[in-house]
Image (cartoon, rainbow, N blue to C red; front, top):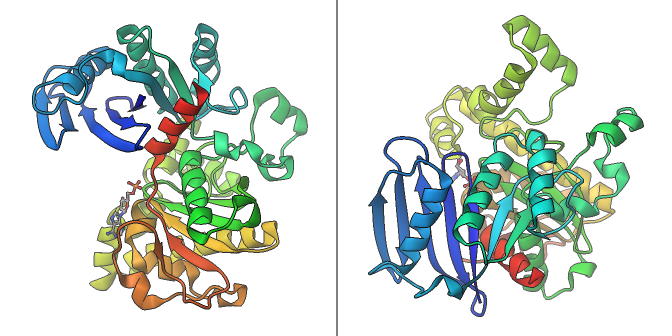
Length: 397
Ligand code: AMP
């Protein structure tokens, strides 16, 4: 069976077609500028690439073009739509309405649209638009919702509750939900496989460090805590997101800067993080360059990021009562030896020893960067969220 994985944003739509027998990607691509002049689909398949510059006023037209590309001359990989057994849709937030991957029915669609949009106003409405477009174009194909939050559904109450009135948690669902769950799930399972252990035997801290960053404590294969919260604004500072901040400081800043509540949250999401501290960029490559050229604020932004990440590693080792492995993944985790070194530096007391030469190397696939005798293994593992979505979708059927 082939599973089509869809990741729809407000003006974009990324896809991968995965053959579940081999778990290989047979076609992939993305539409950009949907609903904006100059929309384009860049598609790959059969070892070829093709660019479609075509007006895409909405997601339905985008999906139709993707399905056309999957059959098109040169890059086509299927002859008929029947070859697509199911579609898995990435959904950022589930609230408490969905705990696991869910087959789409009219009721499910209603709950998604009526209950979850306010939990992820940038992401969930866009995903639902993509989903509706898919249903229209492929009405007979089963669709699954795969949530970024599902892997974190195993967190105990003491980890996911905030110290607010319990009645308000019950009434409004304000609690920690986490994010990047498919990534944390994938890399923690890959780490267990690599170490030749059952997930139940391991206490792992997974560091998904990318444009958005989150850290999870995975004990016995289950997530027991994670750094992102009610929304993906919480935890460590990120490219442009502030990470954790005293709520009173937000009110104070809003008053001083003359911002409304929602403008203050936009400010925390878009103008802060390493971009705000450095005043240079949200991209860690630019920060590395800046720091090398003596820009003190670039160096400070990197220092703060490493320090905050390190604190989560230490906190989660304490929360789990041990640590067998630290995993780095995503854009920064997979590509920045400096960040990896900065994060684990000083954790020798926990039994973490980095092999610096190994850490500096660029290696395809899983890469062990701790010394042979390091009590805690440190691994770099490329994440593959699409494969998790495809697996979950196939398993549901
Ligand atoms: P992601 O959100 O996982 O796609 O990660 C994107 C981020 O990874 C970018 O914003 C960069 O900050 C970071 N990144 C990518 N390549 C490198 C690199 N070679 N060194 C440092 N950071 C990198």
